[in-house]
Length: 322
Image 1 (tube, rainbow, N blue to C red):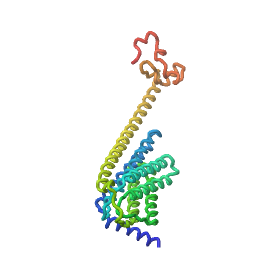
Image 2: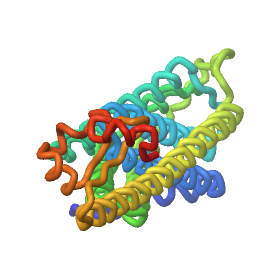
Image 3: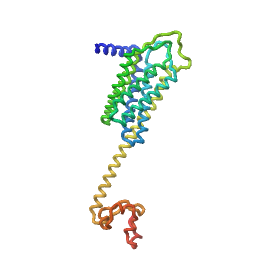
Image 4: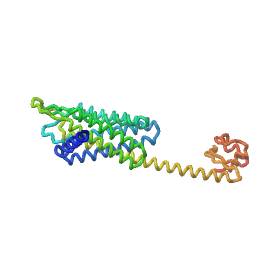
């Protein structure tokens, strides 16, 4: 029985996509969604490699990338839908939908990054925020009719979004590599798109000629084009920023390793000599070898910070080492 229900649901989704949508625009929505999710997981990876103070900024960027990406995917996919009727959008509800998407994504990502034991809950929050964005976006449609929903299909859509969000977050935190980020992005994209098209099959429009599309509502074509252009630009800048920052951080780490290795070699060389050696900047000692400490009978902590002229004969100060 369960298998037959799933088969009917899958058939309804496939029919909805192939018969009621422009497949080129559906593909565009999928590409935008994949781009957004991959950008999100790159920003999330950077958030895990920085200080707690800087982490907040990176998580905020990841939330904006995911929320705006989900929002763009929804409206481009709605543009692909052949409604056979004039469709507009209430701008207030449309604005609310993106705020919900960004805030929900932000809460989920913050929980996932800071509380590893609560990552399942974080996935639930992300999945539900995607669902909330979708159905608020549907409610923003102004059409000559009413939308009626199948409760079973709505729950099925939310379940798809939640389960795949949980798996995506689990994969992204399992190992920080390009492969895991890509896999996590694919899983989350499937969750977003699966929720959207399952949610579309949950809605049925009941025509009502007494209702008219509000004059002040935005036409779907212009809205979707504007949303896609702006969001793709934001996502591209975010992705480039995270990749550049990661590259610089990697170079900085490699340089730090080289400096530590150089310092270790110097200390080994200085400790091997029988002469007392110190390093100074403008006459202030910043380091010394063990031989000098033994000769002076003082610990290194006391020598560092003192004046080098404390250890040089008055007659030799005129030719002090540089």
